[in-house]
Amino acid sequence: MGRNRRPKLSDRDDLPYIDAVLLETFRFRPPVPLSIPHSAIKDTVIKGYTVPKGTMIIQNIWACHHDPKLWNHHEKFDPGRFIDGNGKLINVDRVVPFSSGKMKFLSFFFESKVKRGDEIEGQWAEVRRKSRMFRRRLTGMKKDGSRDLLE
Image (cartoon, rainbow, N blue to C red; front, side):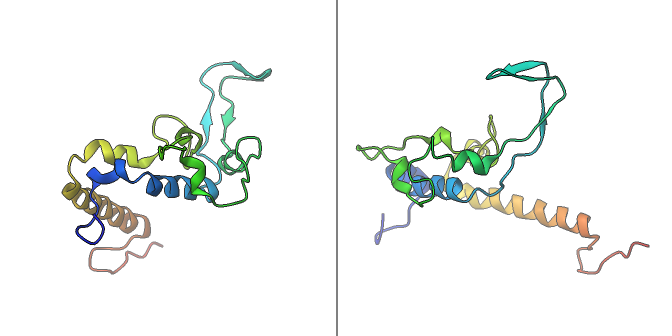
């Protein structure tokens, strides 16, 4: 790796600092400040507060990532906060860039689908194709670049 060859997906375990930089980037400047709205599926009590069934719940992602009780020097960009003394990743679950729960990192979806590094481009090509298709539908743009004018 390095000057001899490019890194591959299989090298990821040997490059924890790259993951630490990504985690710190998501922590320091989350892609979205608030999660998508959810609703309570049943009456519940959280830390003494009653949350009735059907209550809209929106997670403040920015506040979670900048809470001084959770993060030392939360106002500074420091990937080292995710590396322990042995060079291993720590505190990974404390970062929730999109939301909390099973699909908190979109990359988990791609990692489960991609078995070899050379398949990544095919996966992203499909994402780009679907994104263009969605954008055309949203804007009324046709494949040739012209638009349907709505009255």
